[in-house]
Structure formats: C-alpha cells, structure tokens
Image 1 (cartoon, rainbow, N blue to C red):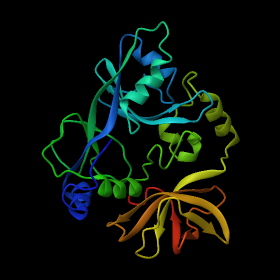
Image 2: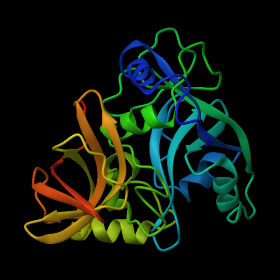
Image 3: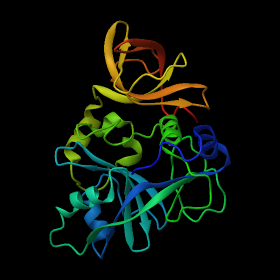
Length: 287
C-alpha cells in the first residue's frame, strides 16, 4: 500500500499508535473468498486450518508456492460466509495466485476493499488481531476519526513488534521456518496444503540456516537497509528494515542472521563508509 512517510509528524504518529489511539489507513490488501467450497478450497491451499476459525476471528497464515517458499504473509478473517485474506502484497496478487487453483470448486476469489489497522483505541468497529507488543490492535473496514499514522512511524512499530514485510524482510526465497511465525501460521494437524512437504520436513528435522530476528543499535545512527551484520569477525546476516524506536530510545532493525548466532549476541553493523555496534534481540522488541 502506498502511504506518505508521515501525515503530521513522526513523533505524534508513533505515540498515537503506541499510546493514544492511531490508525494506519488501508494497511492491508484484502482478497475475498466466497462460495460453498470457500473454506475447503482454502484449507487445501494455505497453511492455516481455516475451518476452526470462528466468525469475526483472525488468524495468521502463509500462502506458499508448490516448493514451500513464501508467496504472501496472510491474516485470515472469517466474516459471515466469506473468508477474507489480508496481506501486504496486495489483493490482486493474492487473488491471481489463488485463482490458478480454482478447478471444479464452488468458490469465487476477488479483490475487496482494503482494511486499516487501529491500535490503542476504544469503541472501534473491527476485529482484534494478535500483533505482539501492540495493545488493542484491530483491523477495520472503515477508517475511524483518529490520528493517521504514516510509513515511518508504522515501520518503527512494525519492527518493534517483529512484523516482517513481504518483499523487504522476507521474500519468495524465504522458507516459512525462517520467519519465526510457524507456530502461529501453520497447522500440523490438518490435511495437505500447497507447499506442505517442505514445511513438514523442516519441522521434523528442526533446523534452518537463518532466522529473522530483532536488533538494537548501540548509537543514535540509522544504518541503511542491506547493511551487513558481523559477529566475531564473520559476516552472519543482513539488515532488512530499520527505524527509530521511541519506546527503546534507540534505532532498531529487523535482520536475517545465521541460526547459530546467539539471540542476544553483540554484533557490528557495517556498510560502505560506516559501522556501528549493536546487539541482537529476540522478537518482539517491545512487549
């Protein structure tokens, strides 16, 4: 979604989302799946078990390719007879991907109106969404009369909460277990779904070579995205998203690092012409 860097100023927008009530307009693209076979169709495609999700409930899921790599990070919302899939890659892309598998099923896949994210507000007509470290997170179809939050402040809160962005923190080359979201996004008890073989094999083997993690910068310096993470003299990872955290009073980042590096390890972040000390931290950075 295209949002301005800020609507007013970054500090007030950040504090609105963290404390006083704020809204990130049209944060999620929405794909609607409807029809008598909608639930069964999706259960054969996405990683979450859709059938047990109650009306008005939200659960995390993955849309994977046939080889088990990420195509989209999803929130699944049951809304009456429809299932809504919320993503940051856009409704058209998700709808196009799903439509490839619409063969002899009573299901329709189509883009719907985008939805917004609200936090720390009361009396919001919406659906609670379990984003770690973000109180009262709610998705809503109508943009409420609250301070609007732009991309800079939302990125800071997103990093603090450990929410990866498709195409930035994770890509089509990412294995689900590398995201750290498998416990919330994958059902290991339902039937087969697209890309299941890789997910199940890694779950049994119990190991991936890299993981998404948090990072807190030791000085008031914002390294560029793509900077190298160095531990004990070896390159062990790369920064993906970077922002200033007012909650932690320090720059923070998401990074993909080698799995063998301790989750609280001191590291250096280096880039052409610069470098700064930092420390890895488990996600979420703010609880």
